[in-house]
Length: 189
Length: 189
Image (tube, rainbow over all chains, first blue to last red; front, side, top):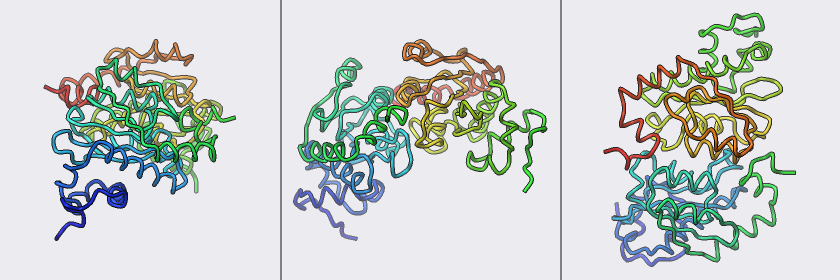
């Protein structure tokens, strides 16, 4: 069957949003691998932002993550925070994407995250051998970039204003949820 | 309906093993709360060991975790490592039990783990506000006890030889799996 998104398909927010919403294992049936090969880092970050937007639309915390194979540039895992949606205490953008990728060799991949990683996600990133992390927002939260670099991980900051805006709106609307997501329910007064 | 395990039921390995295998949300239908109230810490640790044994029997890494409410002594979450069974890169004993418990206030609970926690699990334990951790094996692996104490978490070592034996047998049978579980596939030569 011809794929909906092919090599010559224009790189638009509409196409990247559709990719964010497709299950990872469906991508090969809908998107030509050559389309992914022409995506720049900022495009993969934009997919992570659309995953964050999906989380926001579901009433959750808007943080998304995308993992690509460094050689083929294909997406091998992606996901978003589901603290609210699944009552899941630590399914953040990064943990969600890593869980989606499954039992693979992460030393051949790059992880894009819409928000600076928390302590758990940063620890998981170095424990699973990622060589590179791309971070889309250090304005709303930051802190673990130096720890990651000390673990010999290449850290790129690639801020996306759309993601920053979504996170700031969510934080002003749901300050308690934001605290719970970072520090647990006990920290919510 | 009368419950199978009641207040006067003897605390045997058979009873604790059945509790390990029951879904957490089924416990209230099968086990009288008064039975849990008479369990000592070593009994909850034994349940974690039986969860580890369940993981071993499924061909996975034998590590289990149990979370109880400090006041009621009821189990609010439990689980075991599913690296093999679910192709899950970080579903360890502790992460599994915390995911099972869901979005609760962990500052009122204790987590029992059959094996000294890895960096990710130790980080999650302090980020989610646990006041106390009970560890069943620092012979096979250790290292994060001091880090947890530095985060003001009360750490008790309560070794269970059954759990140590199961872990040592697994490690000698599956050394590559053991390395992958701790360090990721890239670390396996």
